View 1 (cartoon, each protein chain N blue to C red):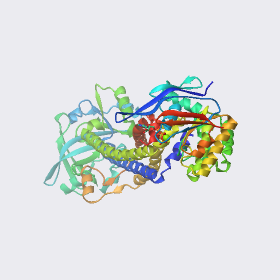
View 2 (cartoon, each protein chain N blue to C red):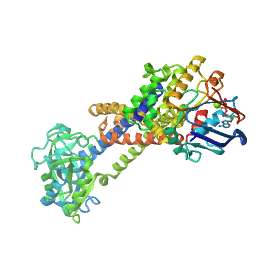
View 3 (cartoon, chains in turn brown, green):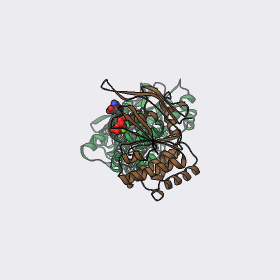
Length: 228
Length: 407
Ligand SMILES: Nc1ncnc2c1ncn2[C@@H]1O[C@H](COP(=O)(O)OP(=O)(O)OP(=O)(O)O)[C@@H](O)[C@H]1O
Ligand SMILES: [Mg+2]
């Protein structure tokens, strides 16, 4: 079974009553363990598509099915719970709660899931170790570099044991070394935990690392290729 | 966890939070102190009239209050006295006989109010002894002497041991006349009373007015002023109300009751304004705290924090803020109020004079009553809940995509 099925999804925004088509008739399928990049020029609809997959935004037409469940029809608040249990998110920046430490930020999502304390502590320690931040556990975001913050965000996205992780330009604010490092961690996680990653990017060095590259042009999928 | 998060969020912008807390602090201190002052002054006004003269409750023959003549006085009644004694919170029932007479000395005459008192029991109400400026207090309950208020004594040019003559009407039209020696002179705060009051022992007064064993009133001294309604209810239930009437100070001095209510109302307005200022202060702070975190809220809802929990955290933040302010405000105002309870503010000059005209001592008293603190806590709580509503409603409608777009 596919993890994600996107069937004929379109999204039209209205800017001062003028219709702006952001995504047009997109059909895509993702299976477990994919490591896919969503690429395309600015304004091509990458963020819009990721938001629709993650249920942050509703499509104007079409449907999104996650492990057989049509999430397009879920109510707003049901969708929040669905995201908590099934989807991990990494945004471009400012992912973390500034007043909490790295450990608390990662633990936070498991608290929302009401996981028992012992499990939380174990997993938080494991994940922060995997992202190479075992000595930054009690550090607050403002004392970490951008790359370190993004690694905490990836750890948090994984902590909830989601079915897949959506990352919108996770490396956009990073220098090339940190970006490479983050990609290393993501592909490591992808391999070890067999978790599906879908990330958008402009960066050709990031695109190189993806196993599948989907290109959007003016909201339409213009190419979808497997590499390596 | 939510508590911790709210607490940490509170201190993100220390200066702003401290300013907000300080504004709550000042409002609490000001309004508690003001209310205490008011209550103190009110209590004092009431105490001056009811606690130190009329008694908080009086019992008379039915009809006496409307027509305060000797003909409406009642026969001393042990059963009635016992009922009064047994009512809750009653400390003493003080018997009195009161009437008007003409006082003369030499060729000066003046209308006076003569009050016949039980020299011992009256200590609990119009306690004359400490007010004596010259001479002595009564030694027995039947001696042929009077104590005069100093204004009256001055007017009649009388000194201690001089003789005063009273002329008037006694019971059922009989004539009342007598000569008495002046035993003491007292100073009463109220200028009006100071010009017209004369006191004599109860039996002496009864003899003067030909009303042996008769009384105008039992003035009741109660232990707990707040429990006055209980005492009143007991008396109304257990007395023969077809023969006797029971009145509290509000019925006896409606103008005093009005004054108290009016002052309270004007105080509430000032308090309301104070709290409005504070409300806007907290509102602004909370609004800033939430709007500048819109992006963060968007992220939180995106990763799966439901809006109600997010709203809870924000609500906790504003509650923390107001309660911190209230808490330290309480500590400070309790100290302040207690200080002034022990050292009342002494007034001088015109203000003191105007107080004396109302029969008040020239001090500003504060009242230390837990009900004041309790009421303020409720008000502040209600305000902070109301203030939360707007940011909370925004959070409850928050759309992550828009929030993260910076709208
Ligand atoms: N909330 C919105 N209201 C109106 N138009 C929008 C809104 N969000 C996006 N759009 C429009 O939809 C189109 C697609 O935008 P989107 O943000 O998905 O592009 P993107 O590929 O993520 O671009 P970038 O690389 O700059 O992030 C653009 O034309 C954009 O102006
Ligand atoms: Mg984008």
